[in-house]
Length: 383
Image 1 (tube, rainbow, N blue to C red):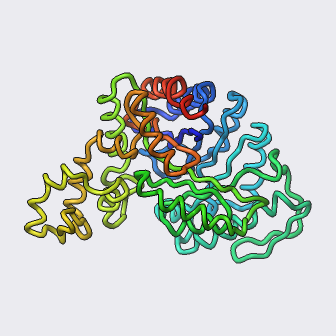
Image 2: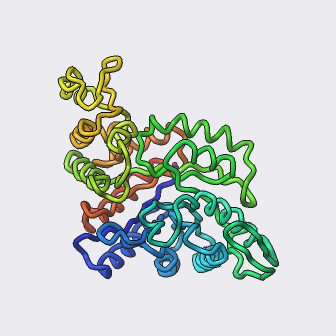
Image 3: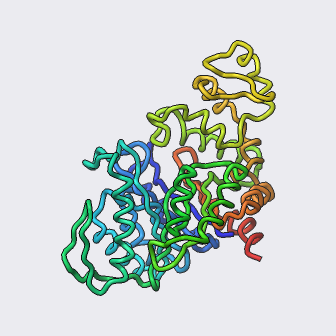
């Protein structure tokens, strides 16, 4: 099992410089404490949510401040950039870090796409064309291309990556169709939806079967599955779980970027977290009797399809202990964190990615958590 950290570089109440300095300090400590990777998002225009528009720049610093931790583009939004520039930037960071880069790819969301002048309807094809081009750029002495979105006359593109043949390639995935596409293309899955391990387990098994017959876009098959969750380790179990659960709910709260303009988002989140817990089913069963907003009972369970208001209320009351027991969050004291990681490990996941540093969890709590994971949790899975 590998362990990594994800960074949005959130800063509603901090200035840009403070967040950059704190983020670097956290990543340097993670390197010392045995984390395997740090992943940085690429976001634009989310001025109260994320301050990470250019991961390659902060990777330039981290490449020289860390020794062993891998630097993950999590992810490069391929439709925003000419594939030549992506290939050059990723290869340059790979050299600076002596071969520690992971190359994650994605498409982002309409709000950011339209801000970049990109038609959202074109982004799947743009991602696919760029993804096909970039490994060929790395592998070719002279590269040329005629496509739908990009045309390149014969040119030599340098540098080539430090890793041979090239860095591992991944895709950000939120739904089964993307898991399957990743397997077909022989690239790793970054399951970023914050799901309960029990929900992801059948998809991991399906990915393993499909990837056996992959036609890889690169020079090799990156048969790896990464699952993302919120993580926090502290001395007091209950209070640490509560803080982590609040961080999760703030992140996906109403109007936030990952839920904005999505239909039935809280019904889907409850499903991703393993469904309505029994104690909440009992608490909210009175609403089923009157069929509020299409909510119905199905085998003693609450069916939230069509029940937007009730789904959000249940989501809000989803308790920290249940979230921790289901592995939606890996949080609490070291013993409880170890048990939650084991739930993920049993599904066959290769890498567990934690989002720790959020607007809810301050710098000192993150530093303490990184240290405790390194001292008490990670060693249990490296024996």
